[in-house]
Image 1 (cartoon, rainbow, N blue to C red):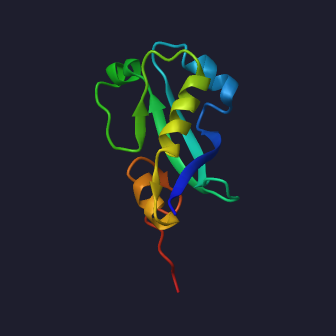
Image 2: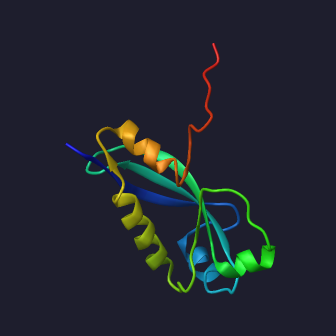
Amino acid sequence: MLIFAELKRIDFNGYILNKDEAQIAILNSSYFISLCLSIGEKGKEGADFFNVDIFNTGWVREKKMVFGGNSFIFDDFDDFDDIEKYIKEFIGSIYGDSWSDVLIKLRRYFLWEYEDYQCID
């Protein structure tokens, strides 16, 4: 049986503190929003946390250069609900034979809370 990922919750990192502030921000010609996504197995309790940055092409033009992964570029969105819907659908399309398989795929796009985590004896 395949296991599908499910977006459980979106939290905001950085200077954007909530969905209302995010809605105002995306109406600007340039925006950058840092998110923490709670993603778990569809239909089950529990989630892992993943960080991702979203921004528009106006922000890219303003900065002239953008480094790294774990980000999504959105353009022509004027409602944060549409961005949330897109992220939710994208996450819901990720599946695997086990949660470990799903994690491998999610880590291609999002920064996992345990990325580079090492146990110390």
